[in-house]
Length: 640
Image (cartoon, rainbow, N blue to C red; front, side, top):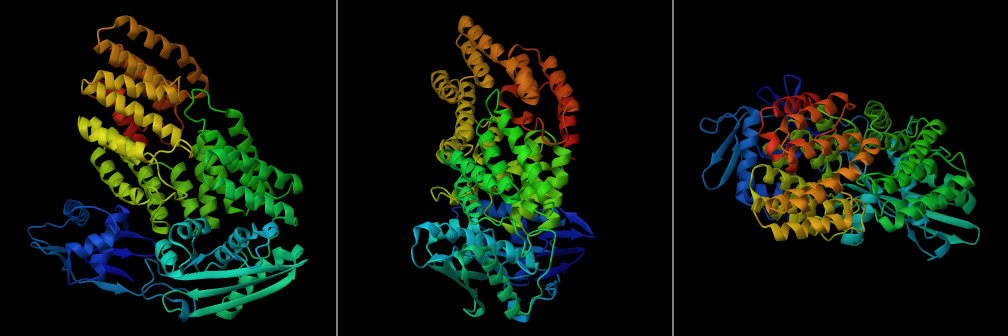
């Protein structure tokens, strides 16, 4: 259900609030809060009920709710002393008091049996596809458990009538919760599930599947196909054809994933591709090279296999990302990733995943304008795929990034990194309190994932919260947040080593400010053990030795920073400018530092270059200097 009240309209499907056709920016948590109040308009909603509904399984206090209500009232222009919309019921809770007009959901031509009156946050039923059970336990075909699920997911998405949950999310939920349909469906916010099995007997294979309404327990459609194993592609497609026939749905031919599309005719190539994705999606550094090997094998078997080229591009890009914080990242991996992604798009221009992967890679090459165009193309091809909106948010900046991140969360509320994307923008705009509030929301989501080994555990949220606390001169708060980041970071996972180093470096800077110099030296040493040429840590060491009145040691640290800085000039020019500015600050040349940053921002590609400057600990003195005004204004202007 969507709602209208006063000049506002809240649409659940698009997950936004508008006022007189203009979008009112609200964080996902505030939208959830507003929708819950609207669902119970006129009723007293207790604080306990709101905490359970909006922060389930999270240890948050009434203060979080009070702050959220305050922010929501500000967005509505509501006065708590004379409320028009939200009335506080002392010591009890809140009541939405304005007249509310519900709007019937737009269900297009979906059969009545599929319309969800309690659609779990969506106007249309959502589907989760479980991995198919290998009945015979045949080891040689075990990879088909994931392979069939992936194909059925893509085919269902091509129907255009459903929101289909990424099957990797489903796999993660099963690993945590077991095979309970109800528990997994609730975890991924799906109302429908597809369960099935396959059984191989010699050269033939039989696949059965059932589409089940979890709420009612009703089986809405069944499918049973069998044939030679080498016709597996046609057999998989026929599953969704049978589903569509039983439900009276018309199969649409679209530009994205489409039933009957032949990405490869080679069963061995399909197997290599599927196994490659399983290695890649583990996000384990140790498995990335095996993913490359699998995808390369698939490409060798079928050089026109667009999905395999996409996978190879993604795997090589992930390997590149393990080096992105080195002074000289593995540029050859980035070039190779770009080449394979472009080739995948050339082979199949209607393959949304290829455009989305290309967008992600282009951002690392600072080709942000082209990256945005590619991400938008992916979204246009598959408008219900959260991964494409995430990549669009990654490529975008300004309000476009906020919209993309909010849409990502609408499709995948547990993707905590979207909060980081939004917070980056607010840091660049100088809205540190807003950034911290958004990070707080994301941290609640992230911390629920602690220890669950979820596929997409966000890193960096606590680190950025710590930097904001340090910018506010809250050293103890910053140290707590850095410790939270270290508790999550795993050097064996993608980005784990990087954020461990950043948290150690941040702790070192906080401890210098607290005058705990021995502890600071220890933390900075741990950071440099992970990244021996991290220039900012060498500059921090110089500051520490200056505090210790050890000029020779300070000069040695500065010499080390100066020695490695030229490498950054050719490999990471944006970072090089930030480092040069930090070097000026350490030397007390604040005006030179501001000029360096201003020149970098004026010459940088559109996007998030320099976004962290306002909270960089080495710039503490700089941000308080009059010369920094030009830098902050330029950062904010780029972030509009």
